[in-house]
Image 1 (cartoon, rainbow, N blue to C red):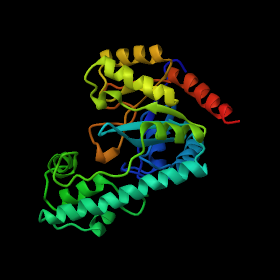
Image 2: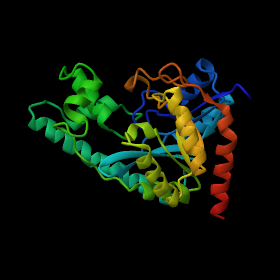
Image 3: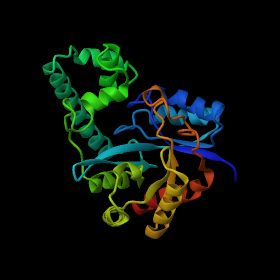
Length: 293
């Protein structure tokens, strides 16, 4: 397994991806020859059971996963969770709370767009999301705006209307990073800081200060390999992981048609997440579960 390749950060139709959990497994096995994958849908584990079942059928290792949005000093921090018990009542209750907050925000965004003279309804957005999607979000609203000719592409939709600071942007309920880490840990999982580069820390001291705070709350890893991480950045985050005693993970952040420049397994074309990351991840998950006994 020395040359094995993995992808621990992919999204399905259960959140804002364009492929079903089963289709993702087929792609990972037949097109990408990956050895292990994790489904990390936003604030939901609704697609994980189908994902695991398909993984057994196609003989590819799967990990239960989730990506939770946290409020971080007015920014959004994403915390990945691996190995959780997806039947855990507390986890499901807290994820449902986040999902309800998203639903309320969707209505408020649509109302704001309507006030800007754009003809759009929640039914338009539901049709865009389709029947297989368990939760609706801004990418689906962007899809409606694109189909109506209001914008030229989904990035344009976010830039003009939906990103933070844009006219139709609305905040939603988010937990703190500590609360997100706790919900993952309490369900037997390992919490990992997703794509640290995206947070745009002003300097290394700010990153390290943040990691000290998160490690005190139980953070177990950091996403070292990511589609937008250059080789020098991968090396930097590997050193950071070693310094703080964190496991390294990696993934493409694949969304299918909703993020067309990123491919499963290879990201923007140069991503290569090594299978050597798996033993530390498995050990961390086993330790997390034993801590709950």
